[in-house]
Structure formats: structure tokens, C-alpha cells
Image (cartoon, rainbow, N blue to C red; front, side):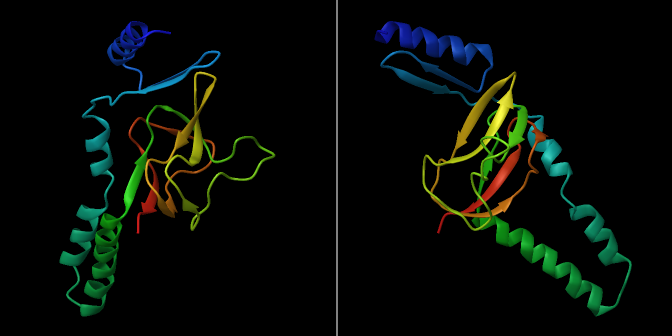
Length: 161
């Protein structure tokens, strides 16, 4: 495969709306990842945050105990800001194992390195390995095994320190 064919393939993939394509030939492996621009998933994720209901609960009682209870979730939200969120690069079904009889790729507390496989997302009968782009430790797994996932949906929280 020459450079011109690779450039044409990159243009085709970027215009097709596909997030990732892997091509393996005899002695060549090519992975092309594109960033799809979509404003729909981000507002949907923001709407799921429980900020408004917590504020309504705080306004109703005047006792200091509930105020202290609502301060803890606010601190928890601030604590997650130091973590890196690994998101799904495509729509599909999320799997934590390579097959039903194999162990999970990662667990909470697992140390990961850049390039480690974290999970598999199955889309149209293709099983796409999702690799880590950062090194660190898995803090939280945000999706259940065998659940459908959307493009740009958060999958893992990673502590990079």
C-alpha cells in the first residue's frame, strides 16, 4: 500500500462519519481514528447530572444536618474533576471480557498503561478493542457489562497520578 492509497483511505474514513477503522493486510496494520463532532451527546450527559434536585432539597430544609449531607456530594463531584474520563469512540455494545469464559480486561483499582485494552465495543458484528490513551489506575467503571453505549459516552474514570 503506497502513501497515496493511505491518504485516500484517510479522506474516505473522515468523510464517512465512522469513528475508527482498522485495516490489516499481510505486512501492514493501519488504524484510522477520527473525532466525530456531535453536540447531542454532551447536553444529554449534562442533563443527567443531579445538580438541580440537590439544590431544591437544600432550599426546603433549614436544618444544618441536611446541608452537611448535600455538601458531601458536591465535594465528590469536585473530586472526579482530577480524573481522566475514557469515552466510547462508537455506538455499540460494551463488553468487559474478550469472551464469556475469559477474565475481565480491567477491574476497579487495576493499573493500566497507554495501549492496554480496557474493553470491547461490538458494533455491527465487529468487536473493537478499546485501548487506553493514558496510564494510571482505574477508579470507576461507569458502564455495566453487555450494556449498549452511545458515541462519546463515559466508560471509565482513570486516576493519572
